[in-house]
Length: 83
Picture (cartoon, rainbow, N blue to C red):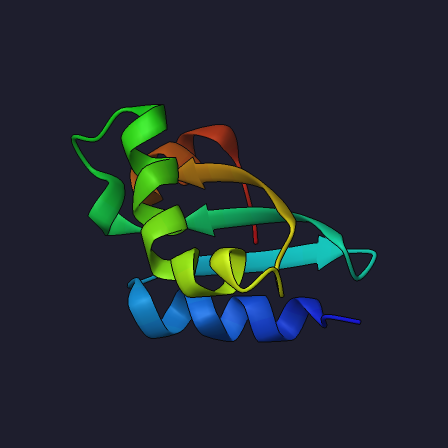
């Protein structure tokens, strides 16, 4: 079973994150990703950016499903989100 901490490490290796949390059951996961790299990007572009970081893990089927909330630090502050 895949540990959510491993997914966090993969994301951190490929994307600057000011907040990051991943939760899941070993197969399906949910992530809160707060990154300045998301500034100026649409919701879809943000998810594509994360998917690119995780591509090899999706292609190898180690990672099967990841729901994402991708925010800039400013959006996270406005929404009172704490990762």
